[in-house]
Length: 208
Ligand SMILES: [Zn+2]
Image (tube, protein in one colour):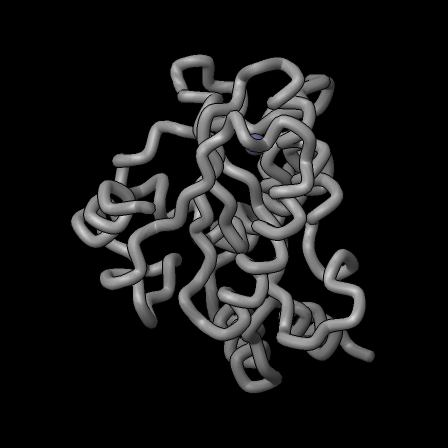
């Protein structure tokens, strides 16, 4: 296989990228000046050594210092954030969108997926064990006041919220923690990853 075909195959592994789009990327690179390609190669080289997963929220982050022993992303590490409020989201993009609104100061947990109805082993599709462990530890340390569900308002999102809430409610001491949901009226049918500031703020303030 030649280099362009190999590259197209690699691009096709990206989420949402089909064969045509992959080819378009390859042709773009063939046309582009070498400066762009050098920048791209350099960025990929850095990621190779510094791509890490946060042990608290499970977000992937780049760590510029290859010898650092950081285990948390900058959001979880930030002591000015309210560690007592934990928001459960489906994916990194949702977290990024909420961060962009600038109106949430708590921390997050990324479930890493959603559960289709009637799934036999839902625990294999999302990070439920990790979430239970995280909540359990926070309750023991008396550092958790509220858990906010911010999953999509779709069949999959609802099934997932139901399952996660049922599971979380079995954790010893959970009765000391407020469980809430972003207001549905506004977020109905809306993809969290495209949420704007006023929509999010309103759904957040009206959470129940
Ligand atoms: Zn984190």
